Every structure is written in C-alpha cells, then in structure tokens.
Image (cartoon, rainbow, N blue to C red; front, side, top):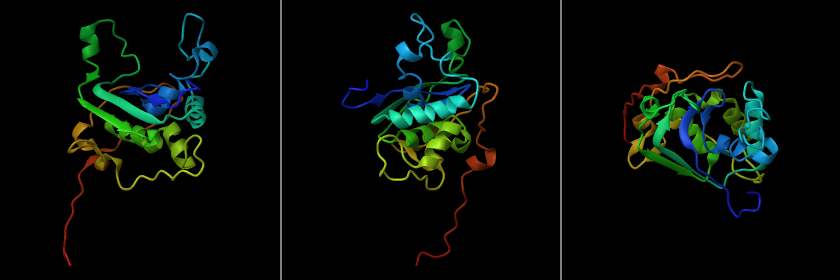
Length: 204
C-alpha cells in the first residue's frame, strides 16, 4: 500500500457505533492499517484490540493515521447503505435486509474530508460533533499537502449535489444506531433540516 502510485478508498456508506460514521477516512485508518502490525492475531485481522475502539482515542487515531496516509481518491458505495453499523447483530439475510438503506447512489471525490462530511449529513449526523472529522477540519489540511487549500464548508452541506440533480436532502435517511460508551456526536436537529424561506425584494 505504501509503495502504490495512488491510494483509493472504497467505503460503504454506513454509521458506526464507535466512529459515528464510516467513510473514506476511517476506511483507510482502520481498514488500511497493516493487519500484521495492528491485527488482533495471526488469524484475526480485526484492529479493535490494538486500536482502542471504546474511547475518544479512536477518533484521534483515525485523524492522525489518515494525516500520514491520506487517500488520493474516494469512491463511496451508497447503493446499499447500512444502519446500526458496523454489525447489525443478525445472522441471516432477512434480518440484515431490515438494516440496509437502499440509497441507490454513488459518491466520489478527491477530497476525503469533504465526502465524509456529506456522508455524515446523509446518515443524519452533525459532522461538527464527529471528533475525527472536526479535528481534520480544524487542521485545514490532510496528509502530505501542507500548502493545500483550507477546506471550508460554505452554507449547509446538505445542499451539496450528490448525484445528478439530487441533493443530500433527497437521499438523507434516519439511520438507527447508538454509539458506544465514551464517544460523542449528535444527530442533525430537525430545525436544521428545514428548507430555508427566501424572499427576493429586488432584482436590480
């Protein structure tokens, strides 16, 4: 991975009881962390023993690892999203279907922070309360681009075009799932989802 010409992150759009949302950034920081170093054992590539998933330390890890190993491009699979992630706790297809979110959309961006911000909005979470997204947003840069532009969100990210003529409002859903103890994050308030009223008094 470290010798590749480009690093492309391909996450599934879903929420997560510890990380709040799973996107291009977490997909690299946890999924891309070498299992021979961070895996639970030789036969278990899970990272939850080596990387504490039950505290704010997880968010610090996600942000710091991604700053060192950023993705060059992100393609997010929203064709079949998932609530109650990462594991809905079911063992059959019928049970799993109850947790799937049929969004029928794909998201893609060179900017992992931007796409994950939109993803957080789609699953109904305020990105400013997702610690690793807030930390990277405050830094204003990701990875080996110290002179890169500061990522600024203008207006409400729900207005960003997602696919064709659809906006985040068109695909946002109520994603069920509680976060683990010691983690923070809050859902978008109902008032923030209301469409604004605009009045034009003059066109001159």
